Structures are given as structure tokens and as C-alpha cells.
Image 1 (cartoon, rainbow, N blue to C red):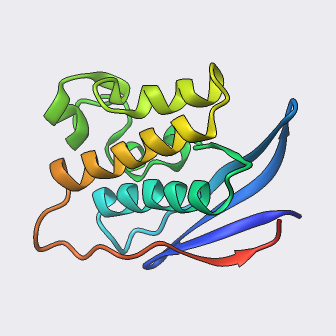
Image 2 (cartoon, rainbow, N blue to C red):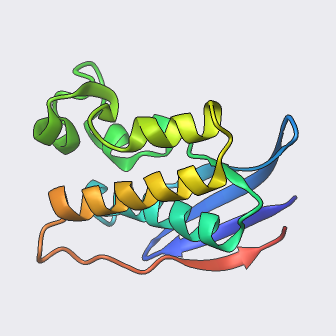
Length: 148
């Protein structure tokens, strides 16, 4: 199997090489661990995506949506986004007032690696500025396995 694994503290993010028409695409499958705050794990997801896009300029990334979002997993449920800290800062469900929808469009509409990287970097900055507390431990994303 062709894949890339990115380590972010105690969380590992697996990106699997998938066929998406004529585009080289890596699909994120996340291993979310409860030992770090959801906000830090969410930051890790986007730092992992930035790292993968930086290292593999010929690929697009499918981010996995709410299935790979620690915030969605932690705060989702019957109330949807109402308890999510991103919703509390934007008052927009589904991360609508963040660069997330632009990231999705960069994949689905434009098939643009450069736009995906731009919006993923903006999401990292958004999370760092709005969600990460000064005393929270954050990690550095690093590729620990590559099989492309």
C-alpha cells in the first residue's frame, strides 16, 4: 500500500494514496488519541496536511472531514457544532467562516495543489490564533513513514 504517516506528538495521521480521476491524491485516515486536547489534535491534522502538501507537490489531499477532526469527534453529536470552540468563535456551523471551505473548493472545484497548501496554512494560523492556549503543548509534525 502506498502511504505516508505523519507523527504529531502522540497522534499519527495516515495518508493513503488513492485514485481520483487523473489526479494524484492522498486521503487522510486519522488515528485520534485522547491524550491531547482536541484543539491541539485538530491543529496537528492541519499541520500534517501542510507538511504532506509541502513534501509532495504532485499530490492533492482529501482531508477526511469530520471523520478525522478531533473537534468534531469531541464536540459533535446531537447538538452538532454548537459546543465546538470554532463555532463559538465564528458562530458559523461546519467551519464556514474559516479557510476550510476554500480548502475543499481547492480540491473539488479547482484541483489545485497550490490553493490547497495556501488554505491549509491559513487554517493552521486560524487554529493557532483562535484555539490554542498559550500554556498548551503543541508538537512538530514529521513524516515517520513514506511509501510513495
